[in-house]
Image 1 (cartoon, rainbow, N blue to C red):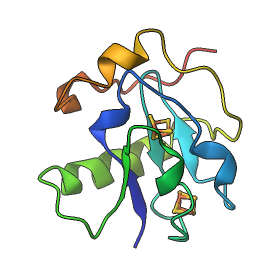
Image 2: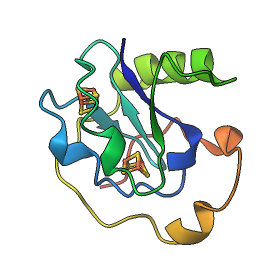
Image 3: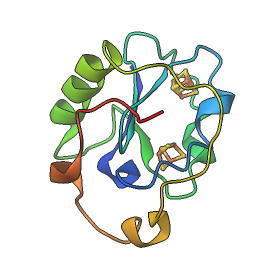
Length: 112
Ligand code: SF4
Ligand code: F3S
């Protein structure tokens, strides 16, 4: 079991989720985060921290669950760990209103 960052996070990245994680399971890409499914200990602490409810358990019914888990597994190998909250992405409030952003995900790492 692990928790999963869904496509709701894309182009938002509020990052309030990362600081509560006891095992530093979050990795940051250009326009979204992923949780490393191998690192996550399923503590559920991050779920309540996301203001747009973008984090769900992998046991939840979601049509893209398999894709999201594969993406998280792949990108955890290449994206850096993020442990400190930072400012959300520009336009996050507007982006949060868009449903189904899966195709907008970037495979690029976060710009530093
Ligand atoms: Fe980290 Fe717990 Fe969230 Fe997993 S469920 S990513 S261990 S805070
Ligand atoms: Fe994304 Fe929510 Fe964390 S928008 S960065 S999952 S706080």
